Image 1 (spheres, one colour):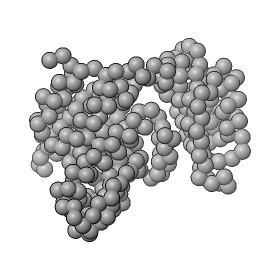
Image 2 (image 1 turned 30 degrees about the horizontal axis):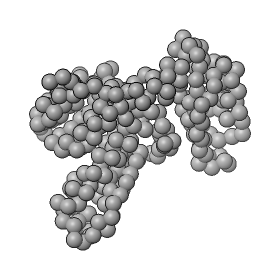
Image 3 (image 1 turned 180 degrees about the horizontal axis):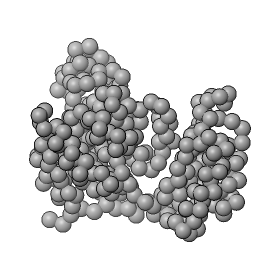
Length: 299
């Protein structure tokens, strides 16, 4: 069988080799936008999109995402970053510049549920997800044939309570320095703090409830027992606090007392796959800024 390949034609304008993205967060004060715009103009860059948000004009945090075009960008990037460092120091900025055409490398971790994985694979194959899926890692072997039909390497690394540290060492071996971001697509294992330190704000989980409600295991059973009228799903960055990291995206659907736990799960699977795919797409397009335990998402 010929491996499937992504269709990237639709990205030709948005990911030009001349396009870059600048993300900035800093204390709000007058002159930030004017100074950054003037800087880019002086360096012969053309701003094509700009989004900004302030938590509070009087002493709050300011966030901005700018897309700009600059001919011969890669050859000028080092000097551009060096010159901008002076501006950043003046305004106490946390900032970065990324190349729009440079695709992030992803690893997808899964267990036995396939719906979130399939959504990511379909969106990648259709060209809706601009990234390279470098590998799929699983504690079960169930989805090897499916994943390899897409031409993507599959690593089966069993996880047991007595060999969890050994399994994580293998996870680190296959991912460290080889992928930019890890996606937990219903990977039903708790990630250790030691592993997390290598992927701070670069590991995305889908939790099958509308957090902060029903954290931990069996959230649909918890929801059913409470007789909820709305169920949802939450995509968030993974932190040491279980299901407590910065939230990226959420969605909900109305249900009723007539819906069984099985029906809640069926409805929930659809929400989960869409919410996770949105979050991953926004992440790889540099649309998310993290501040403390919150996110600002320019979508």
